Length: 248
Ligand code: 6GU
Image 1: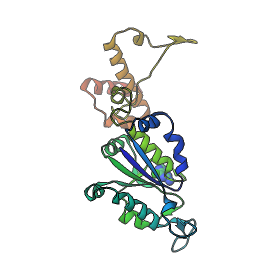
Image 2: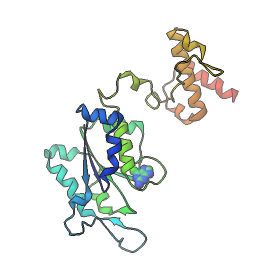
Image 3: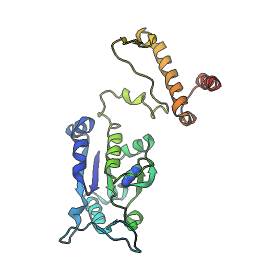
């Protein structure tokens, strides 16, 4: 899978790309990340990327020309049928809220273009005539789309076949199951005064799976009850939840 990231601050990505899961995915050839400095697509002697807003007001607005030229240059590198399908995603607090489901959806594409917004805004014609999707990573304001782009690349890359050690680690995890994760323990069996739940030491894998599922349901009910509306639960689990709700 290939990511083409348009940014004014390509250096911000070096840490994220040179450590951990992403570094491994890149070095194994599972992922290609190309960073494109928007400033390189200017033609004036000062490499101007922004300008004053028409109508006045605070702050600067990213100019449309370098962004159009950068994206069109990428589109011209691939067959036109592919270019017509290529997602051009603007990272902005005004976008649709990023989620595991959107990560899964994006992971099915062979290539994504991510445009990192900066400053107080971006010329609306970029939205209207170039961008195919707008994504936000949460209800707070960042200085720019770079950190959001890294969040999206991380969440998408770990879904790609061959990136995680065992494929199983995807199946159990929060948001994939629609539940929060069950508590995990490792050695020692007693730390200070605090023992590991006995069932986990029992070797009874049936009981362990049952306990974990119950813990995941209880934790979700406590912390994110709205997630239970969309979780896949059997009748017995539905009854457990009703009983737990009575206890509260
Ligand atoms: Cl994608 N960009 C910015 N600037 N702020 C954000 C965001 C994106 N998502 C949440 N806050």
